[in-house]
Image 1 (cartoon, rainbow, N blue to C red):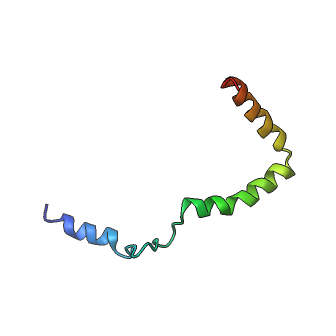
Image 2 (image 1 turned 30 degrees about the vertical axis):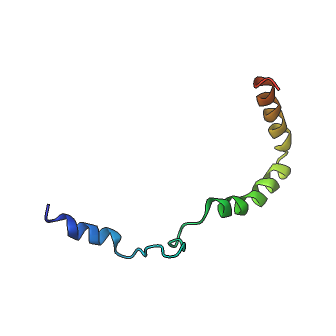
Length: 67
């Protein structure tokens, strides 16, 4: 039991705690990540003709739900 403190120190060494809403490095808000990926997703959808597949799937789900 006495050996747990040094391992905890090693694990947390080098990490900064978030203060006043600032996130530690390497993480971002999910909304920011979504906004970053949407332009690329739209470009790939148009470039590879995926729009029809999206419409077809949405239509199928709508029929399945009875709308």
